[in-house]
Image 1 (spheres, rainbow, N blue to C red):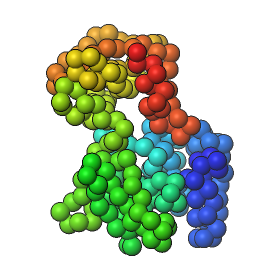
Image 2: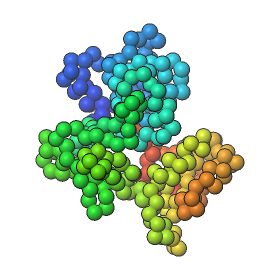
Image 3: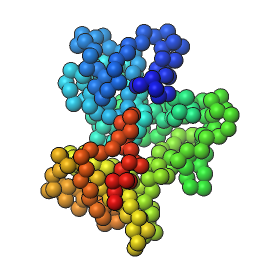
Image 4: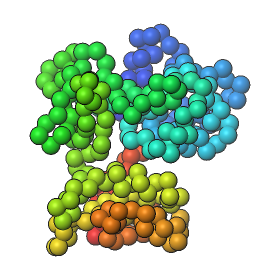
Length: 265
């Protein structure tokens, strides 16, 4: 995690607070590439989904990852494919939920083992509610003096504590009166696509907005793409497909939605 971001700073804070030995590596999608094969393993590591995905593709790096006793993954949604790849890991793997304003995560959900769950459990002292758009409101008085209104559309469990994130309010496509979550389309397509892609949207005179798709040029496979799109409900299917050199990403490996929209016309 780069020290330019709160995630990197918090790793330093954790190591000081818990008196841990901090191992530093150059931020990349292969953080274990310089770790010796005979390493005894780490007590704790924090990674983003793209780092975990890339690490799993290299046998020696994957084996080092399996030695981590507590792994937290944050900074973006974890696909069902990635969750399945981690389900049988021998040690604890967690998905974390938080933001810069909360100084790291405020909730965790277990990805593997008998405690595996789709629901995040907030820490003690964290209050949750939803606004009129079903976006999550976080009340964490020990971290922030006022409630934090997020753009994350959520569902709160009937127990009033646990919650799930459905997607970003910014990523809703209002098409012909139907609200479509961009993340839902991507989740349905991901198991069928080997090509790097993302879903975006553009204005439409008839429907108001429509879904569009960006696909990387040097990985394009028309047969696979056509089959994947036919598996979608009709109103989920992208109206246009744009071939790009590279899917735009943020410095932390998330899809750069704003940049994707500029390529969707």
